Image (cartoon, rainbow, N blue to C red):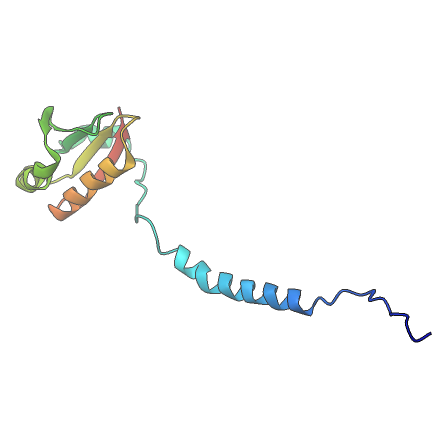
Length: 130
Protein backbone atom coordinates (compact mmCIF):
# COMPACT_ATOMS: atom_id res chain seq x y z
CA UNK A 1 0.00 0.00 0.00
CA UNK A 2 1.44 3.32 -0.99
CA UNK A 3 -0.14 5.41 1.85
CA UNK A 4 1.30 3.45 4.76
CA UNK A 5 4.17 4.90 6.73
CA UNK A 6 6.88 2.87 8.32
CA UNK A 7 7.27 3.38 12.04
CA UNK A 8 10.60 4.27 13.58
CA UNK A 9 11.37 1.68 16.27
CA UNK A 10 14.97 2.52 17.25
CA UNK A 11 16.41 5.50 19.11
CA UNK A 12 19.49 7.12 17.66
CA UNK A 13 21.97 7.52 20.56
CA UNK A 14 24.76 9.19 18.56
CA UNK A 15 23.81 12.78 19.59
CA UNK A 16 23.51 11.66 23.23
CA UNK A 17 26.97 10.10 23.08
CA UNK A 18 28.39 13.31 21.60
CA UNK A 19 26.93 15.37 24.45
CA UNK A 20 28.37 13.03 27.09
CA UNK A 21 31.82 13.15 25.49
CA UNK A 22 31.76 16.95 25.47
CA UNK A 23 30.74 16.99 29.15
CA UNK A 24 33.52 14.53 29.98
CA UNK A 25 36.11 16.72 28.27
CA UNK A 26 34.87 19.81 30.12
CA UNK A 27 35.11 17.99 33.48
CA UNK A 28 38.63 16.77 32.67
CA UNK A 29 39.75 20.33 31.93
CA UNK A 30 38.10 21.87 35.03
CA UNK A 31 39.05 19.18 37.60
CA UNK A 32 42.76 20.18 37.97
CA UNK A 33 41.76 23.81 38.52
CA UNK A 34 39.62 22.91 41.55
CA UNK A 35 42.65 21.69 43.54
CA UNK A 36 44.38 25.07 43.42
CA UNK A 37 41.93 26.88 45.69
CA UNK A 38 42.04 27.23 49.47
CA UNK A 39 44.54 27.92 52.21
CA UNK A 40 47.75 26.00 52.62
CA UNK A 41 47.73 24.76 56.19
CA UNK A 42 50.20 22.56 57.97
CA UNK A 43 48.99 20.35 60.75
CA UNK A 44 51.16 20.60 63.87
CA UNK A 45 52.78 17.53 65.31
CA UNK A 46 51.94 16.34 68.80
CA UNK A 47 54.44 17.74 71.28
CA UNK A 48 54.81 16.35 74.76
CA UNK A 49 53.64 18.71 77.50
CA UNK A 50 57.01 18.40 79.25
CA UNK A 51 58.76 19.92 76.25
CA UNK A 52 56.38 22.86 76.32
CA UNK A 53 56.94 23.40 80.06
CA UNK A 54 60.73 23.45 79.69
CA UNK A 55 60.67 26.15 77.05
CA UNK A 56 59.30 29.61 77.75
CA UNK A 57 57.27 30.67 74.74
CA UNK A 58 56.30 34.15 73.69
CA UNK A 59 53.08 33.88 71.74
CA UNK A 60 50.83 36.83 70.90
CA UNK A 61 47.20 36.05 71.75
CA UNK A 62 44.51 37.63 69.57
CA UNK A 63 40.81 36.97 70.20
CA UNK A 64 37.92 37.30 67.76
CA UNK A 65 34.53 37.77 69.42
CA UNK A 66 31.11 36.69 68.17
CA UNK A 67 30.55 40.26 66.93
CA UNK A 68 33.79 40.04 64.85
CA UNK A 69 35.68 42.40 67.16
CA UNK A 70 39.42 41.91 67.65
CA UNK A 71 41.18 41.85 71.03
CA UNK A 72 44.98 41.80 71.32
CA UNK A 73 46.08 40.74 74.81
CA UNK A 74 42.63 41.73 76.11
CA UNK A 75 42.49 45.22 74.56
CA UNK A 76 40.05 45.90 71.72
CA UNK A 77 41.59 46.87 68.38
CA UNK A 78 39.80 48.33 65.37
CA UNK A 79 40.00 46.32 62.14
CA UNK A 80 41.61 49.24 60.32
CA UNK A 81 44.48 49.40 62.85
CA UNK A 82 44.97 45.65 63.04
CA UNK A 83 47.88 45.28 60.62
CA UNK A 84 49.91 48.17 62.01
CA UNK A 85 49.54 46.97 65.60
CA UNK A 86 50.45 43.40 64.64
CA UNK A 87 53.51 44.71 62.78
CA UNK A 88 54.70 46.56 65.90
CA UNK A 89 54.02 43.54 68.14
CA UNK A 90 55.60 40.93 65.84
CA UNK A 91 59.17 41.53 67.01
CA UNK A 92 58.17 41.07 70.68
CA UNK A 93 56.59 37.65 70.02
CA UNK A 94 59.03 35.52 67.99
CA UNK A 95 57.11 32.27 68.54
CA UNK A 96 54.06 33.40 66.57
CA UNK A 97 50.43 34.15 67.22
CA UNK A 98 47.49 32.28 68.73
CA UNK A 99 44.04 33.19 67.39
CA UNK A 100 41.24 32.39 69.83
CA UNK A 101 37.87 32.54 68.14
CA UNK A 102 34.32 32.51 69.36
CA UNK A 103 32.16 29.83 67.78
CA UNK A 104 29.93 32.49 66.21
CA UNK A 105 32.75 34.55 64.64
CA UNK A 106 32.62 34.68 60.86
CA UNK A 107 35.16 33.00 58.65
CA UNK A 108 35.87 36.32 56.93
CA UNK A 109 36.93 37.99 60.19
CA UNK A 110 39.38 35.19 60.98
CA UNK A 111 40.84 35.18 57.46
CA UNK A 112 41.27 38.98 57.65
CA UNK A 113 43.21 38.53 60.90
CA UNK A 114 45.36 35.78 59.36
CA UNK A 115 46.09 37.94 56.29
CA UNK A 116 47.04 40.90 58.49
CA UNK A 117 49.35 38.66 60.53
CA UNK A 118 51.02 37.27 57.42
CA UNK A 119 51.50 40.80 56.01
CA UNK A 120 53.00 41.85 59.36
CA UNK A 121 55.69 39.18 59.21
CA UNK A 122 54.17 36.61 61.56
CA UNK A 123 54.74 33.16 60.07
CA UNK A 124 53.53 30.81 62.79
CA UNK A 125 49.76 31.07 63.39
CA UNK A 126 47.63 28.76 65.51
CA UNK A 127 43.84 28.81 65.80
CA UNK A 128 41.73 27.62 68.73
CA UNK A 129 38.19 28.15 69.90
CA UNK A 130 37.21 29.85 73.13
